[in-house]
Length: 64
Image 1 (cartoon, rainbow, N blue to C red):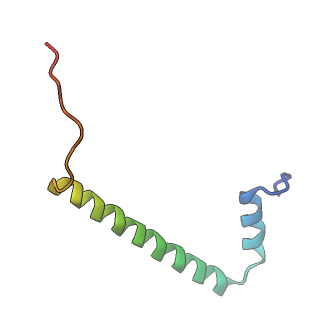
Image 2: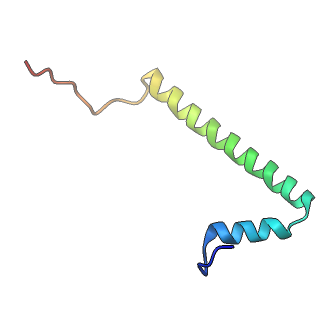
C-alpha cells in the first residue's frame, strides 16, 4: 500500500480491491469506449492534416 496521503495510484488500487467484479467490468467497458472515441478523434484529425485541408505555417528553407 502506498504511504503517500493522496497518491492516485494507491487510491485506485485500494478502490479496485474493494470493488465488485461487475463494477470493474463496467468500468473497463467504459474506459474502452472512451479510448475508442479518443482514437476516432485523433484519426479524424490526422486524416484532415494528411488531406492538406489545413494550411501549413512552416516553410522549408534550403541552406546550401
